[in-house]
Structures are given as structure tokens and as C-alpha cells.
Length: 249
Image 1 (tube, rainbow, N blue to C red):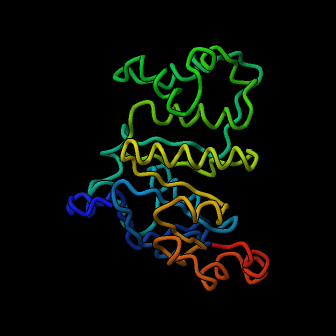
Image 2 (image 1 turned 45 degrees about the horizontal axis):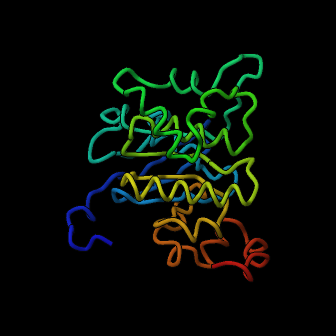
């Protein structure tokens, strides 16, 4: 921990106050408030339908909200539009469109981002730039596709990286590697990373902060403090806690 640079520790990347969102009078998020310090690696945990993706969309400026405040680095979201990387949950390349990885990344590259960043970002996610660029998007495995999507998201060196369930459709070994990769990007670039995940045990070992969400915020803090039996019961129910107790951190 950088105790010497006290100011760095206190810089706030994300501030959310009393955020509430309803669809057709049904509350999806209720009075959610939390803060994320710059450079943190954060996981949003919660069952299906708990509001995780809605929260992420609100942080990205894609979801209007009825009540509350969201600030990124103490400014409105719109001030940071060019400075956010995003990996969506479901992304399926159109198999009927012949497009290489190189073409896919080049389309996503804005003109201020030099072409060499395309190769560098592929290298950073553990892919060989030459062979990866030549591959057809439609032929990539789940793990390769996630790496390409992360490469696209980090190409312009964003300060904030959002990942919605990055390990969907990847086997356990690939998942472990993916979380390690995300951790490396976070440390190497001081990038603030927010990811949605279901993997409680894997997350607990690799993130600085968890946000437990079930319409309202059930817990927030370091995993070893926040992930109590009580908060997990509020998230997933007592059956989940009983069946996972023997292997939970």
C-alpha cells in the first residue's frame, strides 16, 4: 500500500449517492451509495436480477436514473466518455460477417490512438499480435474473445475499466487466468477496475473491494470484512451459504 502518498489513497474514482432506478414502478436499485478509491479493483456481486448490470449501465452513462448522484473523478460522467473501457456481458460476433481481429480493433480505435497501441493491447492480454490480428472473429474461443474484447477496451489507456461478467462461457482454468490478467492490468496501469461477477470465492482472493447488491447495497468493503455469512445470506439465501461454507474464504 502506498502509505507514503496519502493523497493518492484518498482520490475518489467513483462516487455514488442515493442512486435509485425503477422500471415500471418496480425498484431495481434502491438508495445505493458507495465510493471507490482510484486504482482499486472492485467486484459487484449479487444474484440474477439484483440490479448489477443496471448499476454498471448507470455508471457508464447509459442508464437514466430517477434519483441520486454519480460522479467520476469528481466530475459528471459525460466528462469521461473518452476515458472509459467497457467489456459487455454478451458479445457474439456475427458469423456471417468475415472480420479479422485486426479489423475489429481498428474499427474501435479512435484517431487519437496510434496504430501501435493495437498491437500493444493484444500483447497485454497475452495474445500474439501478428497471429491474433489475422484470426477471424467468428472462430475465436470464449477465452480468446474475452481477451480481444479486453484489448479493445484498454487500447486507449482508460482510467476506468468496466467488465460485465468477464468470465461467462470460460472454463475454470481460463477464468483463473482471466482474473489474474485483470489484476495485472489494474496494478500495471493504476486503472480503476469494476467488474460484475458470480464467482464469490475467486473474487474474494483477487479484489480490493466488493459491493454486494440485491436491489439495495447489502455490503461494501474489503472481501474479508464484507463477505460475512449474514451478507451472503442476504444475497444468495441460506441454502447457498450452507452449501458453500466449507470452501468459503
